[in-house]
Image 1 (cartoon, rainbow, N blue to C red):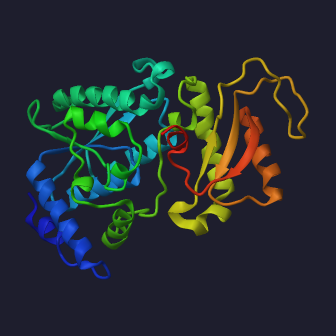
Image 2: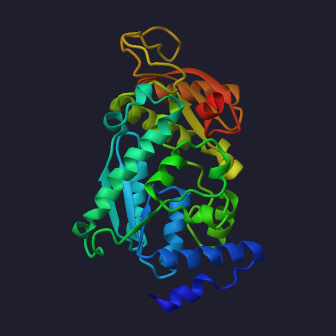
Length: 318
């Protein structure tokens, strides 16, 4: 244990409320009690903050990143780069819910079944983690995730799977909500403390719809390109400025794809999707969005402004 880092992790943070600093100190204490730590690491804000805090406390966590068709490739690359930059070990585990989970019949419990299967895979990977280099003996790691206190107040069937598997959620235990994670991350120097939520790509589809790997990859690329295109409009909103490409029904097969002028072309669309944004788009932007999506094989079905982007189908079905 690095005593210097441990002391530094609990030093007063200028501009941060005393109550929030107390919660953070409690988090650090809890992480020491759980060590050695493995962290389910998506590369999103919560798992990065948890890993950052553990590393700052001298605990050298092992980061376990699940990659597969439901995770955008650029997010996996970002997770790899972040771990490398912070000198943290990263164990990558391939997982695809398209094969491992009965998505067609899981209904509103889709996330539960996916998390249940995923964490069984991660736990098995940890049982053999010595192959990743310098890991403690089999079963020595405590596997944690980045669930925060805000998450447990919403409809999240996957939380039951975490409880059943014995996964620890230190942020939620410490009472740290999403905004608190952002405030602390900013004060501690964590990069991109205003990172928007990054749920898995399956959340863009209604329950019972089973997308293909190519459709998921296309969706990820479409969102990536639109995020760059619409950055001037979304960036001023901070973490609330985001977008989703959602496929509101089972995807068509063999239909003709409209061209940039709305005329039928020869190439069938890979996806028909609505663009949901957290800010209304001026009329002139619709043509830009359509033009960016069509080369990817995505036909724009409409534009929707919705301030709460996460949990779209959960809200409709809960």
